[in-house]
Every structure is written in structure tokens, then in C-alpha cells.
Length: 480
Image (cartoon, rainbow, N blue to C red; front, side):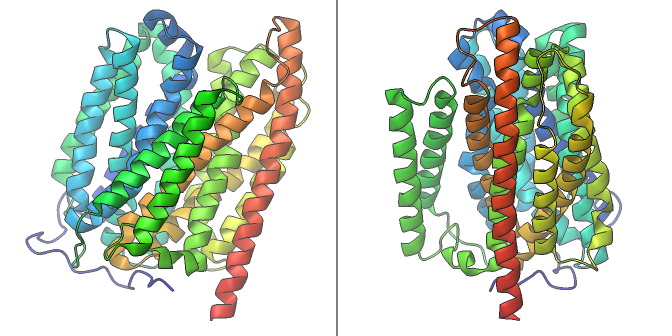
């Protein structure tokens, strides 16, 4: 079983100096939380800015799917690699590089003369996001001793995830209406510049005392495999029966299988496969996968469903979504109160059950109807999502050895975003199954019926994730 982080903070690396002044635990939490919020805002803003962006750059239906998916490609390809590099070569160094890349890539999208340059910027934003997210939990774990202080800090980090999801669509809708789509990415570039300064001034370097060599074959196989898989899922939104979809999906699966073989033979693997025998690591990665598949997948497409089936504006749709994401912020901040009563694995199971109940309660879409019937389900799912984010953050850090904390974060987030890509593809397919060729009221009725199917499917995925977490909980009890 993986060794949990020690009860006291690990010693500062040589030459790091004491954590005083700006470089203290609070500064670390503020900076990593701000970075996570910024990553989620960048990821979700296109849900309300896609139409004007596509019109200005002449993006067709296939290219439009890549406005959101491009970021997922960069994220899924580099999260685990960035986590390993951060542990072995410096968490502040990797985090700072991610902040600089986010600044450059958002500026590139803001100034893009055509769709190809814009989409290149989106992919690079995903790479930057990976370099920010992967070291974040390692930096927090280094700065906060195990116990109530760390539980509280990881709850705040989990709240930043929900806050970023809540603010992203609203930020995008308001800014695109006031100053145009370029201002959305220009504003993000300005915030990224602030993040660069904060990272330089406020973070203290930390790394493993037992650095490893870069696992080149593992890096290549994982990056290529996850990129092909995400690309295939993105193209599947236009239809699953096309040859490019099958080729990309098969190639992705084969390359990921190759990654597993490489890691099994490597002397210093990027991902130690022995961790898969640890119930805590299984609950962390599996819970993150089902979070993306069942929750992020559905909620990412909910604003589109609301606009087409209920006829609400983009700003109103993002406001409805904020009921869910806003409550996830509040519940993540309060999740620390559960730490003494329930293990993190138990919290994951119960939170997934709550999310499943909330999603099932969304059933009952009617074309042109009111969004008010969604509120109870969004409330329950929002509370569950906040507890889930905080609990998964705890497991990501505690289920791996102390010197591999950023790798644990990378593995957790890789699972989350691979699940998100699959979840969005499945939800889009289920929602739009009866919609092709329809317009006006017929399209609204078809999407409402598709949304009902999608919420029940998402609830079923939540139940499957909860079952996996309950199995891990039972395995942990047997191991004691």
C-alpha cells in the first residue's frame, strides 16, 4: 500500500530558505487556488462564446468541437508527465512554466488571425493547464502538514474548481457581449500575467529527494495515446460511424495499452503500476474518472440544452449552471467538517450517490418550459460535487508516497479529463440522437427528450462510480 504523507511537513529542499513573508502556506494556497480557478475559467468560457468566435473565424461544425476539446488534448496528454516532472525537477519550476505558457497561449488565441492559430492556442492552453494543475496539490501538501490544516487547504482548492466552473461561462458571456470574443482571451492573458508574478514571488521550490530519470517511452506513449483517444471522442460528436473516429479510437487504445506495457517494464516508471493494488489510489483515479464521465460531461453540455430546449439566453443558461457550481464551492469549503467522521473514500462514495440523485432529479425537460424544476436537482448535485472535489483532492495526495504527490495529482486529473472527454461525447450523442435535420420547435422537443435520456445515463454512471468507491472502502477495511 502506498505510504501516506507524513504527519509533519517534509523538510524544505536545500537552498529553499524558510517559508516566511510572501512564501508561506497561505500564499501557496492562494496562488495554486487562483491558478486552478483560472484553468477552469479558460476551459469553460467557450461554452458561452462559441457562436461569435466561430462566426468571426469561420469555424465549421467539426472545428467548433475543437474549441473545447483542444484544451482537453493538452491536459490529458501532459498531466501525468507534468506531475512526474514536478516531483523530480521542481514543482515551482513546472508551475511557473505553466503560468508563462498560459500567458503566451491565451495571448495567441486573442490575436489569432484564423481558426488554425486560434485552435493551436487552445491546445497550448491545455498543456499550460496541465503544468499548473499537476504540481498544485504537491505544493499544497508540501506547505501544509497532514491533519486539519491540510484538509482545510484541500477543501479550499476543491472550492476553486467549482468557482472556476461557475465563473467561466458568466465571464465569457459578459465579456463577449461587451467587448467581443478576443477580449475574453485578452483578459485571461492579463490574469495569467498576474499569476506569473505571484508564482515567482510567492512559491517556495520543492521536489523529491529521490529524483527519477525522465521516462521517455512512457511520456510518448501516454501523450500519443490520450491525444488520439480524445481526438476520436471529439470527432465522434459528428457521428460514431465514420472511419476517422474508429481509427483514432483504436489507435488511442492500442497506444495506451502500450503505455501500460512500457510502465510494467521500466526501471523507473512514470506511473508505478503497483499503485493500482492500493484501494485508495483506485478510489482516487476511479472516482475522478466517473466524476468526469458522469458530472463534468453532463454539466458541460447543460447550457446548450437550456438554450435550445428552453429558449433561455447564454447569460441565463450560465446563471442556472451557477446554482450547481456555486453550491459546489460552498460545500467544498465545508467538507473539512466531515474529515473526523468519514474517510475520504467514504466521502467519494456518498458524494457520487448524491450527485447521481441530483442528476436523476433533473429529469422532466419540456420544450419551452421553465428551468425552475431543475433547481432541486442542481442543489443536491452541487453539494455532492463540492464534497467530491475536496475528497478526491485528499485521496490524490494521500494515496501515493509523499515524494510523488504531484504525480498523484497528475494521475487524478488525467482520469478526470479523460472521463470528461468521454462524458461530453456520450452526452452530445444521446442528447442529439433525434435532433439531426430538425429546427425550431421540433429541435427543442427532440433536445428535451434527449436531455432526459442523458440525465438518467449520467446518474447511472454516478452509481457505478459509487460502487467502485464502496469496494475500495471495503478493501481498505480488510487491509487494516
